[in-house]
Length: 161
Image 1 (cartoon, one colour):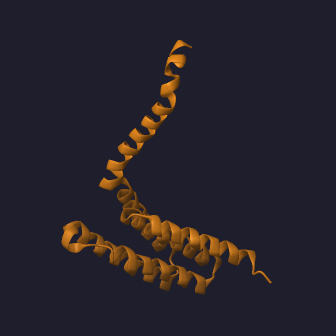
Image 2 (cartoon, helix red, strand yellow):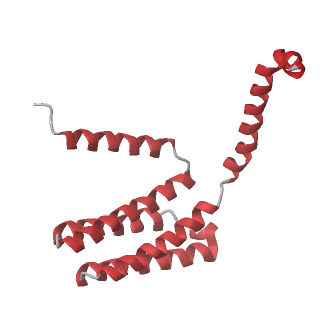
Image 3 (cartoon, helix red, strand yellow):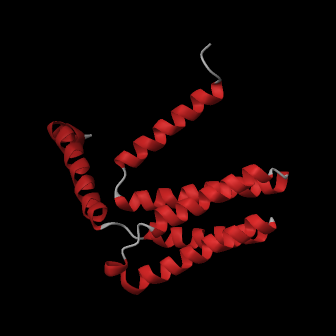
């Protein structure tokens, strides 16, 4: 009558992801793409181990799609120069390796791509966008100021204690 609990949880998770995407800055969106690929590859590895061939293929296809239509598509080769060109080649390599992993049922190749993605994601996360970097001290200063304002009337009494 009301649907299954799984459908409700799935819908709730979908809303959470959509809200995260809407609220995210471009830097965070790339991090979310990396996380999506990692989740898909973890699922593929589980399906590979369990012998669920169709599900493995879907998970690997999803990972390839995120790499090609998300990570590769977001590269700006005119602005990014050599780094963007190298990343494009690396993403293409990963997609090709995932196709082979799917065809040959090769968990080692899945792990190879996961390691590459993990390293790139770590490097990406270490880059703080200038907007966030500039906003952090301002937000911290505002918090300190508001704390001071709430304490200011009580300072004489607090200093005596």
